[in-house]
Amino acid sequence: MNIIQVANYEEMSKHAAQYIIEKVRANPYIKLGLATGSTPKRTYQELVKDHRENGTTYQHVQTINLDEYIGLPKTDPNSYHYFMRRHLFDHLDIPSEQIHMPSGTADDLLKECVRYEQLIKEIGGVDLQLLGIGQNGHIGFNEPGTSFKSRTHIVSLAESTRIANSTFFPSLEEVPTRAITVGISTILDSREILLLASGSAKAHALKRLITEGIHEEFPASALKLHSHVTIIADAEALKFV
Ligand code: GLP
Image (cartoon, rainbow, N blue to C red):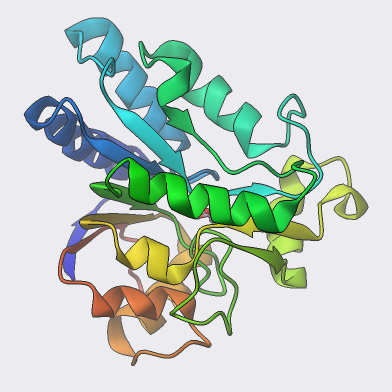
């Protein structure tokens, strides 16, 4: 794992955006795996700014998002569909048919898992997967204990994850209890992975990721099984390393 330490959230975002922009320019047909959460928000703003100012085009790019809450329609402001449109897709020139996200409202959720996994294969897999990290080490919504062999699946969210994510909801009760997420094995199939982390809330998770072993109780440790992982993290997130 290649670790790049930066000063703060702003620098992490600029650095990450530049990293992604260079990949998009080098390969206009790139398949980008995308994440939600507070971590990549500013990175997305930078991508939008660059698209406006420098004309980097996403006309041929395909995006594959990691996860979605079960039960929230695409129009719900807390759905990841809504988040992605608001922070990124509505501001780029990417055709909507090239945007892929798992549906949290499909009638048959198991079929939806199979469809999503198949789709990733059909489009040729993810070239660059952007990841955040949960305080408990989750990646996507793969909570501690998830098999490293997992493919797209339905998960029950850890209480700590629901609490961490409740800041976006009116109350904790309204945070969904389940989600659909690509699996750890699906993530590891990506040709390259870029993990971002900022702030002291992530410091324990980063210490564990960087200094401890590989274990299913700590999902992000699976990344050590991958040969091309870059971490961009700020000083606060790396303070225990
Ligand atoms: C969320 C998402 C993850 C994200 C992580 C960290 O629950 N499912 O994809 O990386 O938790 O979120 P944040 O960036 O808001 O700290």
